[in-house]
Length: 149
Image (tube, rainbow, N blue to C red; front, top):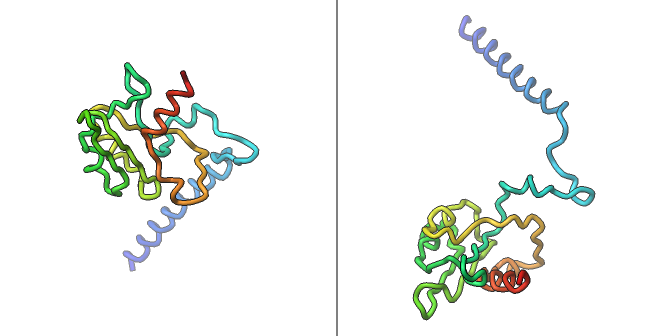
């Protein structure tokens, strides 16, 4: 009998804690953005994890920092990365990324010894097919270097 009363008091306390949290957030301003009418400010996108991108090299922004060590490929649980060594042995010839398989876990970013991979802040990425989300990151890096120069 006493145990049932204590359990009921604990349940009531848990209910009151939950209702207080709900009430506090009910009266606070919204945290979401109504997309067509508003856009996300750049300072709010610092923590956003978009699709991967290659970091440009220091001397040549058209080249990546990647040394084709395959550490990112081994660390990726989704098997969404394909890196092929080039003829020189250091710089990659092919760097493919399948965004449809990526779980955005950051295992590849953390395992890269040269810091050649990072998450982009592409919030408005749109595709009309799965094949459009199979990205050639070396091609994107070279085209962005041409646009900035």
